[in-house]
Length: 291
Image 1 (cartoon, helix red, strand yellow):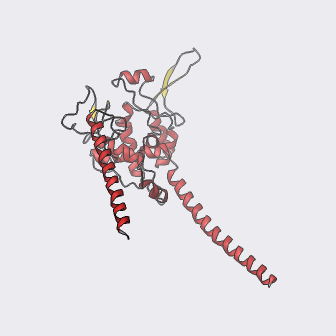
Image 2 (tube, helix red, strand yellow):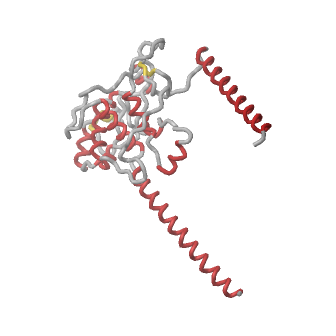
């Protein structure tokens, strides 16, 4: 390398350093001036799920515990209007158990012969009802912020992992960004840092995708739900169980889809090899004829 090239390289490096310093200074200045930061402030923690990867499977016990957490805690504010009771047979419940579970809910139906609406016990063909009659009532009961429906929340609330992780995600079939986000949010409530003002009725959570605070108070606490299988009754366990359940609710055929995709990939690999060998054999015979 010549001296001129070395000087040129050093010059470029210095220019890049100056530009980087300038960008950092500008970002710091923007933050000092109160510019809108990027949310969530903290990236969701990556958890290990039984349904992750091409060989993943549902942990039925975990899904049943998650259903219990949803029913006893989350359903007080959040609906799942796209999930029918009959789908719970996929969690290992019998038809009779599903009927008994659905009957615990009151479903507003009608009109009847007199033109009036009425309440009746739920049936397996019904869907999880909303705890509020309309969005306005939901907003009024929750500081003006209506709780989102949880039917597909695990698919709608995923945070992109960015480069280079999304490249690896293609091969690992990573699809757990939704449960990762929900789990981090439920366990991420904390006291705000010094100098951060939290509006009245809001709660600081750096994992929230909308802002640094949200209207929902910490919904989980130690011992709030009793488990029958002896699993730990902790916020961490509750959060993981309900996050897994919400992933199942959003995509109950996730495991089957991954298994089918893996079989298709194996088929394509074998088919490609056979086509290559066939092509090689055909062209070999043609070359022999030409010779």
